[in-house]
Amino acid sequence: MLVHHEREKLVEAVKFFALNTRKLGKTKLYKLLYFLDFTHYRDTGRPVTGMEYFAWPMGPVPVEFHNELDEPNKDWEGNCLFKSIPVHNGGEMLSVQALNEFNALHFSKRELRIMQKLASEFRDATADEMVEHTHLENLPWHQIYEVENRKQQHIPYSMSLRKQDFEHMVESIKDRKEILAVLEK
Image 1 (cartoon, rainbow, N blue to C red):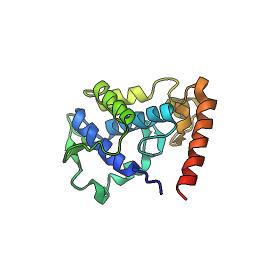
Image 2: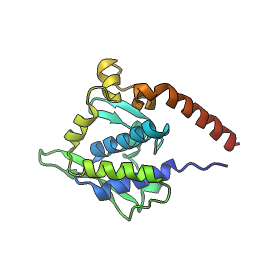
Image 3: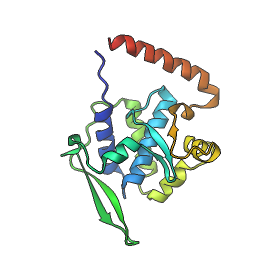
Image 4: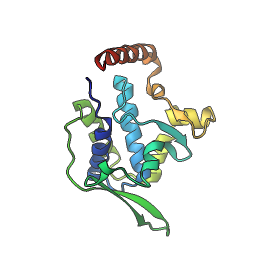
């Protein structure tokens, strides 16, 4: 039987970004996870965490994970702390802190490279700067939210594919799914 480690990868990716970036709140975290999943999908035909993202006003949001943060599952205990902290404008933000070391066990070299690149590129970025990056023209969020006016709607991973590679990657993804279906039996 084939074992998927998407949940473990999610927990460890959150820890990785908490340890390797500054000012990590939920908005910045959502954008880092989005870039991780969509970049890896563009390159390989599969996301890292397996989460689904939706086009919200501030950018892509993994809604199921977003809802979970109100009452985090047991697998976050001892791994990450999510807590509200005051910010300069009198409001609050949900801060994300790693409680132990990052474990790279379930990640491929490609996944780790993408995470390192994202952490380096966005280390000091604010949530607002992250939102700007996800709103760039021709990126999946912009296409769904602005061009197609499909607010709050699902952002398909296939939108991360380059036009010239689309047909080839879709065929490769289909083949991979068929192989996995056989292996999982």
